[in-house]
Length: 495
Image 1: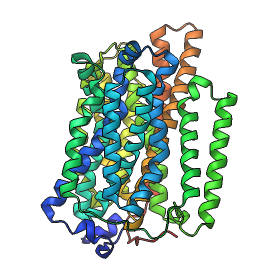
Image 2: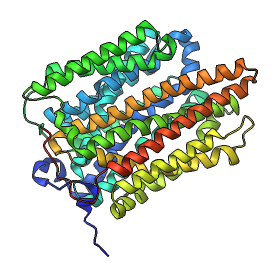
Image 3: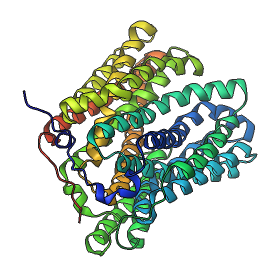
Image 4: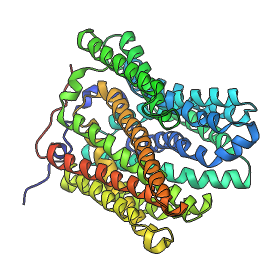
């Protein structure tokens, strides 16, 4: 039997000399730092879903119209999606601890402002600042973890824990949002971040080592402006597409402007001496493959999370609290795999097989949801899909993050983190928008042909689940065919 070379399987080589400041902290302190970073990132992930449950209460209390209410979500999405790439690169240039603390401070102060908000303008403005802080925290946290844990076994375990936080935080947000809104009021979905943010900030000062930026060169200002505005325009077009119409002049012009700015960004990056995003990064096969897989998988997972919640709420008539509890089995399975079993699978089989298998299980789970009837029973029609999606997510999240970061030098880890986070965010937002539109079209067609309102609604959800399953299955196939896992993939400086 062949012995396993963990460094080869994970697709990177250990280069401790480039990350001495971060990786030299002692063993116990390193794991404590991981817990602190995960807690900070947990706030960010939680905030993407906890708000959705409270939107009706916010609408009533602050007098939002149905049209203006969406900006409580969209303002956050715009800045979060727009600044992920820039936030990660700033960490490489100016020091990751410094940027993490800055992002955490922005997010915590913005949460306080949201919690105390008594007007629409103040709440939406504070949500935009929350998105900016969240983008910096999300991008830099992953980079810090990858640099702290350079040994293959420890890195796989650390990424498993981080993956659980990322995968489970959204589901927990639905449950916690329902509890806080029902027991207290909507203000507390934001105020709960204050003690967590303060504690994480104080602990980071003690535990995380201070470090200067590792990347050489100056900030590529022209590249930063073009890519940030391009991403913000793309997010705006996506989140506003259903309301404005996908073929409307507004949507098409916004997409074209985003594409023009992105093309300009690529031209700048090809010529500038110190690019914000070295284009050679995407010549690294694992990095390129993992980001494409991340886009497809995020689209599939958003289909599961949001469309299944709508199915349970509008078709099965579940309360917000019941919906949160319905996600609990999948969260527990994700926890079991992310917090140990997934790491063992990666160390035994490498990143390719677990990722492909996990995505395939998720695809089957979505197919099961596509078979759920109007009078569905939880044990028969909801639980099996939840279990498979929890199992698939728990297995796959660790290896996809490892693949996205595996061939990248530490001085570009923040950039790689920003790229993969952007891939997930854009894939999820675009996938959900597309699937929601397809579901609405199918629902209208069924209703026009004489189907009952619930049957028409459920038929639309079935289309979304099937397309989501195709996304996951395609991602599984790409992982199996293109990921490199059997031979050493040296860490490159992507010039």
